[in-house]
Image (cartoon, rainbow, N blue to C red):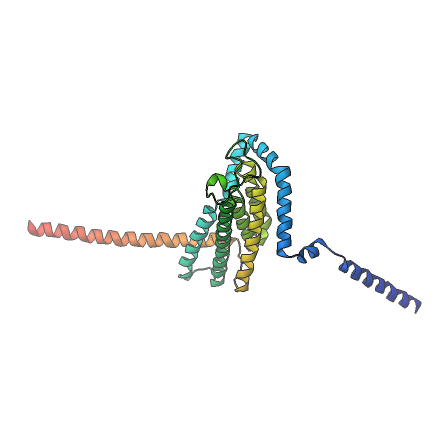
Amino acid sequence: MKHAGSRDELLGRVNLSEAENSNRPTLRGAAKGQSRASLAIVFACGLLLVAIVADAPFRDLASSLDPSVVAVLHVITEFGNSAWPLGIGLMLLAAVAIMARKSTALPPEALRNLRSVLLFVVGSVLLSGILANIAKNVIGRMRPSKAPDAEVLEFAMMTFRAGWASFPSGHATTATACALALAFSFPTQSWAWLSIGLLAAISRAFLGVHWLTDCLAGIALGAVVTPGLRNWLVGRRHELRVEPSVPFRVIVAATFELLQLALTHIGNALQRVMKLVRRSVARRSNDG
């Protein structure tokens, strides 16, 4: 009985310890208890501190980078160019529409999921890009590349000029939005997409076309828009996961379908031309 009592006492202490640990405040729990306005103010204060400490040094670093590094960064930063995800996404949506009309080896569920993923990626890039462009033109922060003596906190609101549209970085916003959307949709490659997106976003500061805080604000904006859009689509029963092989299979199948359609039209056109030639020859022979 003494052994049993000791065991019960030990279990009681363990449960009490677990309860005490669960009641301890955590950073995540504290953040959940804050209002959105409070979190926004905290983020703004953090950006201000980064601007004071790091914006000018980053600009100086950008001007001293090796040309080969700059060349590589110019390639990486293209991931944040919204023309690429929008163009490829719309092309794939057209391919899905073509394959949906045909009986193919791809199951309808895979095509539906791919359509949802493409709408998610395109929507994330488009929505975040629009918000970033509105914000940067309204805020009107001077770009570090506009003048050698550009000040870190120099603003001219509502100018609607490229040299005064620095905050937030549009490339950083769309790179983050696109990377997050792809990470959600292809979980087994999520780390790769997030790494590419983050590097593309920060590359704008290394290239000297944006301040570091412009990039951080763009990252934050993309990180807010994409999960919000995902929750909205999931609430409407969209399945936002697809096998990585499905897009490539759709591209190949749609390409063959288009080639077959093109060859059919070319064959029909040649047949019409041959008929016209025969009629012409027949008329000439009759006239002769």
